[in-house]
Length: 298
Image 1 (cartoon, rainbow, N blue to C red):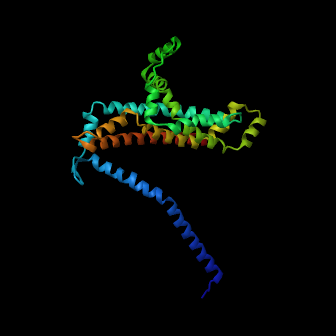
Image 2 (cartoon, rainbow, N blue to C red):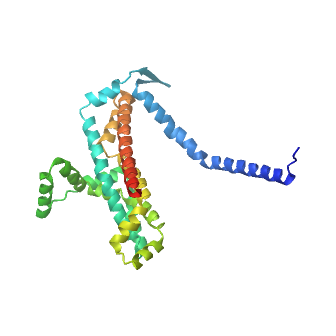
Image 3 (spheres, one colour):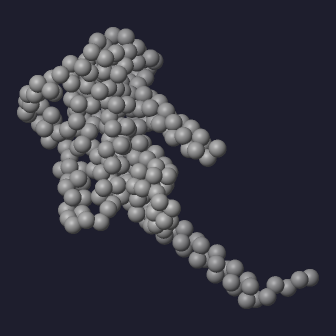
């Protein structure tokens, strides 16, 4: 018979008690978020699935559901004249604006990461749109003023429009939505700055000793270290643009919710189709970064 020392038993018991205490503290710490997620996200999430497959009717104190199958999905895809057009427009906006925002934010972050007078002020300027951002404000900026092209600008637009549609449409789209693209870059710049400050300065010093210039340091040191940050920013940008309230697809979903004949069912079906499209784009973004990182490691 082996008798364990009392000190060891006491130590193990104290460790288990401390671990249990830390677990309880951790659960209590995240419990407000868990409660908020369950009430404001999970329940509406489940309800939207039910509504999309059922005809919804509201009576005093009760919501009635009648099974309709894929009727509302069919209506959104085959009957609605504007849904597929708005869906493709939103997909183009996400696919065109995301890479432009990522590149622009990275360039600005690299510049703001350098030491110069007024650096804090310029960081605040680029982040300011995020603080005051709202759908009506952006809509006013985009539609409140008309800018006439100069002769050179008109020639550039005509040249872009003369190119094949695969090339011309994204280019013209970026120029038409330049204010929106700049407006959505604030958080990405901040995340890039956090990533840039994690890169060891000794790597740049060693590269300078070897005679590397600014261009070589960016491609050989900065960009490889920013790979995971670019992926995070890519996912964040796709989700942010997809949730942009002034998008035609989001406005159509909101308007369909007040259709008295179909109530919430049609808007729920449209929302799920749009949600699946956004998931597909996110999957493509993830696979693209996975392929690039795998290629760099081989």
